[in-house]
Length: 153
Image (cartoon, rainbow, N blue to C red; front, side, top):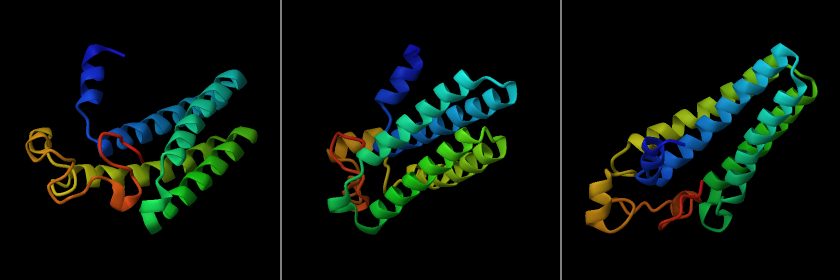
């Protein structure tokens, strides 16, 4: 990763990091789909594993104890997408990969909207001045996203 990308991730908020992980899932699913079109089984498996690793990471970082219904909904979403990806890979189906991509993009777009909301995701300077993640008191815990300096999804 180049220094620009490293700096961008270091200064990213918790929500922006979640969006970046969703972008990674989409990128790997496109790679898996392209591998299917090329007949590249090894390439498909590698791309699928990387997408699934991100989903497993996101699932593991959910805070069910504080997240309530939103965390439960995300948990169910991750389980569903994991299953869709597994089925797409087993059947080597471009259409099934495209469906999984669409599902992930829809949720990623919702996270992007959260990232744009200054009440939830203030500018880095505001965070430093306030000494916390959000001026509205959002530190991620309300949605099972963890809080503090961690960036749990």
